[in-house]
Image (cartoon, rainbow, N blue to C red):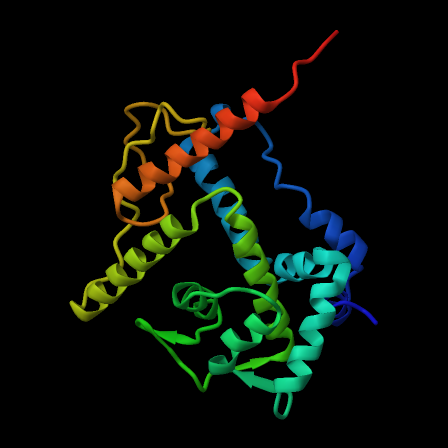
Length: 240
C-alpha cells in the first residue's frame, strides 16, 4: 500500500524518490551570503521561505512515512477509518484522534496544529471545520514534527511564546490594526547562532523570533546554548 506521500507524488505526476531527495537538500545560494548585496540576501531568504511554505505538507508526510518504520501512518489510517464520515472528519474530533495515536496534546498544541488548517478563530477551535483524509495525515505528520521539536526547545517556553503570539494577533485585530513587522531585537552574541546581520545593521532584514516577548526569546537562546555546550563536552576526544 503506498504511503500518503507517495499518493501525493502520484497525484502531482512526480517521482516520489526524486522528490524526497530534492526536499532533503537545502537551497544552495549562488555565492556566500557575506558576498551578497542586501537585495540578493532578501531574494535568497524569500526563496527559502517560499519553499518552506509550499512544501509543508510534503515534509510532514515524509516524516509520517518514516516514523516508526511506517507504523504511525498505518495506525493513522485505522483511526481515520474508525472516525471518518463521508470521507472527512471534523476538527473537533482531531485532538481525541491524535490521543488515540498515543500523542499527548495540550489545548495550546491543538490550537497551534489546527490553525494550520484554518480551523481556529481567535482563541477557539472551529469544531465543524472538516479535514480530508490527506489533511488528517498531514496533521499527524505536523504533530510528530512538533513533538520532535521538543528535543531542542522547552515545551513550556514554546507554549508561552505561541500564546503570546496569538494574544498579540487578537489584540491587533480587535483594535483594527495590521500585524506589526518583526520587532527590533538585538541578536544575542553569546550564543552559537549564525546570522548574516552584522553589528549595527539597519537594513530591511529582521532577526527571527518566536514571539514578541524578549525574555522568552532569551530563554530559548539560553537553552540552545546549554544544549550545545552539553553536546560539545559529552563528545569523546578525537585521536590521531
